[in-house]
Image 1 (spheres, one colour):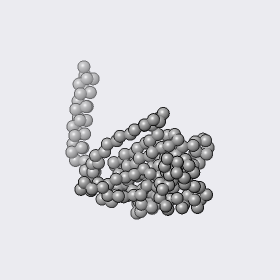
Image 2 (image 1 turned 135 degrees about the vertical axis):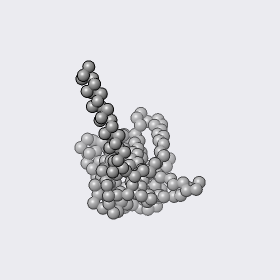
Image 3 (image 1 turned 45 degrees about the horizontal axis):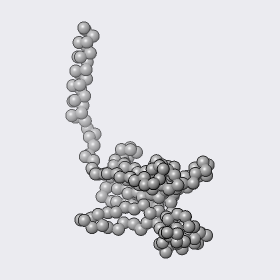
Length: 208
């Protein structure tokens, strides 16, 4: 009986201290911006879902960043030929982003380099494991009131402002003249096979 009384007394005092501590806590965080998000994915006729998405509304908390404005990261990866590339990009791209030297002062360049690093490392992984899949991808990164968009392939972002669509990007597709010239300069070809395709196969001109 005495043990029960002691336990009640201890927990009562602990509760009192915790309530006081929370009330006077000096490092209370600023209210975080709220991003309303929804997700819808369609497998179509594929055997498995090959797409992945990433939502990180509090980027600073994830990486313990204390000297930056509020940041958020959202990404979609549209896999083809398997899900491995989309999984890899969804796990590694935001990590590669924050590791770039210029990330604190030039997130746009950091995004470009993060895509490049992610691609190079997945190519190495694919060679080791005999993978033959890929993924397109699009990222929106928000720092303060600035929106940055980076992409590879034909995954797209749409901005709607006052009910009107605002074009933010041009997807990488083989029917773009600049993409066609780039592919042909590298020894490839673009042919019509139900749609414009790279080497008669892929309907996107860039991918991880």
